[in-house]
Length: 432
Image: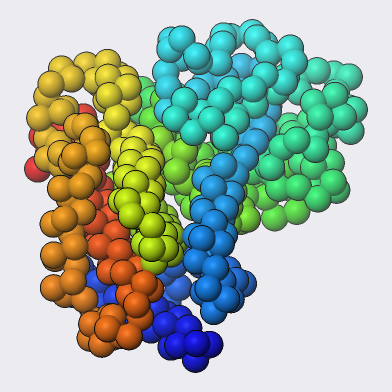
């Protein structure tokens, strides 16, 4: 009995690795190196899953994977935004959450300091992400250590320090104190669009955007070095045009430096400002598919009538809905975008082709599962077919794994393409 379970698990590992590789090669017409890391199943999780299967505890295996997925989905991220009054703190709080200053749940903005205490703003689609608007630091009596104590320094994962025109001693003091306490900070020079507009008016014939941006960057770095900040990194951006300048560079840096579960929350909560951001979200969500399919596999292997399809419906409905929200294809997001770019909502919806982006129902999911089962097994690896006769109930799990994987993978691709068409329609008036 023990050897049969060992064979079962080895075959399932082959299903994971070989079907992943084949699917990626089919999708991108490339040869995939086995050393590349495409899934989010850690060695420890894989070992726990293996042990559960060897002990015949398939419900336990599914439970462990669901706990891991839930932990990733619910990871909290707290972002602190600080700087002097009038630097654009509150506008940045709104922009990074993908909303406008006039929206009902926006941070209050103004030419004078409007934030007296740390104020939390939940992300509208990802409530586990909170952006904090902190009080301004531009007073003569500013004390960085006291300030951090007052705003409850410990609660934040990282700080974004915003300045307009130039960085001053208060910005540098705060950065040094944050660094001494072992947390990350990032300097943002805001309102560069206003600087460029002013320069264009003054120097119509000699205006060079890249040269002016370089001068702004060098001035910021020089000011911070003069105040004792070593090797400062400064990101230039406009809160009104996040798709321009260096917001993407900032989010790439954060994506590299945040812990994996925090990075997951941050990237999914980013506003859909470019094709590159949409591609990053697609890549991130694709990495979860292996765990979701593995849960389906483990549940399907439990011989209880109706259990597998019921669990698949619950799991798939949850993740397909999450995909739509993260890509901005839900009704609320589309309505906001239509108002923002002044395009009829019907025009945005007209470029959406996937039925899942319109309405996710049990009947539709069952229909898609049926199609995916036929398609998935048609292109499944020889390893899957070879071991199914010997796996008994785990063989049913293998079929469920392949079906779930192909369905999620195919429709994630479809939704990502829809999101790109919507973005292009909103920016250029055409989805082509």
